Image (cartoon, rainbow, N blue to C red; front, side, top):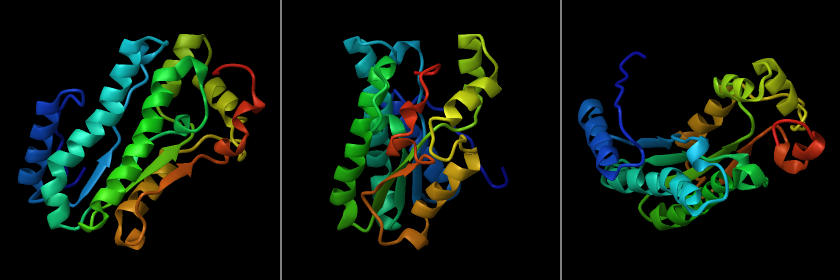
Length: 210
């Protein structure tokens, strides 16, 4: 990416996150937009155990909070914006993904709470809640379930009112909008970007993935 700078950091480690923010500020000469898009759905975060729920919250909630606090001075100075990438799982129940759903719902509450806190400082904080997105995760799901990535996409498509999954660019665009001056009076919004999945279509399908 032209003029970009990659930083490797563990989003479950406070020191790593603070270092990443400091390095970004140094390399880029400041910071006015923070997009929290880190996340995971792995074996450690599946099931119903307390450890699984705590691991999910540490990544999706505590991690977001730590990054925002680390960037707070720069965000306030530059009247910046934060966009948290959440999920329709914050709204739609997935019994097999309990920790992830709980963490994403908490992430959306964090977004609203911090939006109110930072509003008087001129910093806007919003989130987007994507539905299914065509990414390499489809390949992982396919391998795990003994089907093809296209079969994963087809099964997920019927769970959306628009009868298809999203392309990455269709989620990136609203993130860019919320971070831009075009959204200068929008804060505290949890925006579904889901092709009508949260309007009741998700349960149209009964097969994989549940």
